[in-house]
Length: 293
Image 1 (cartoon, helix red, strand yellow):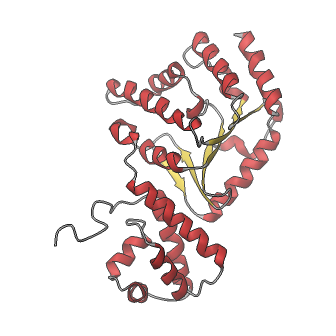
Image 2 (cartoon, one colour):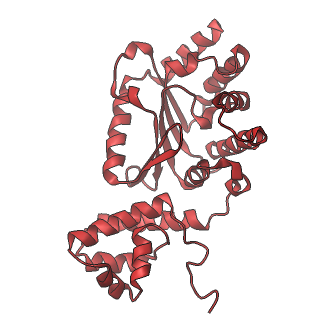
Image 3 (cartoon, helix red, strand yellow):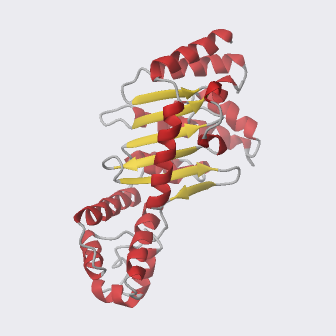
């Protein structure tokens, strides 16, 4: 009967769903079991198991426990981590967030939805100020300079959406932001001197917020492993318990969803942050550049 399927309207691949499905798939294959075995354990169809493993549908806690039992997974921490991942994915799917009002967000919609339920974000930026710390004029100058908009009228809604994202840095449960930014991003005249003066002043103001940690990696840091690409680590629940990594390319957003990828980038971020100036020294560097302008 119509409406009897609890997954109706939610059959869509999500970052967290793919992460969970991938882990369950690896567990099944390690046991040399088929999807039909998992289907029997869940009293479900093979098609349903295939959707779970592809991250297309949410999965209930009892089903996760049943699959862990089938696959011989008895480690409580592992089971709890999978349960936390499933809960975060369910929250992500049922959210009717502000980002749905902006079809022009494109690939940023998924990121905005994840950011909305995240507990912390760590970002390393080589050439631009992180989106959560951008002023409207700076964001507009970046969008115009990008030159890839098919419809220029989409730019203003994009700017509005970016500013709406920044609300996560306030409120009762603000997002914890740790931004490490290369000095080059501060010296690139995006939008001209006036726009950059305002942007640098905004960075100084945001660095005073208790939930914002800002570090600048100076030119004097020399060669280091962060010079090849920028990335953002989005964390959920307890630190280290559940993380995904996003990397932006010229044509798309790349999500790195495995534990291995997440841990590699957490270690990389830690190495880069150790090369960055302390927050107070970072603010002094920003003030110095601001005076030059």
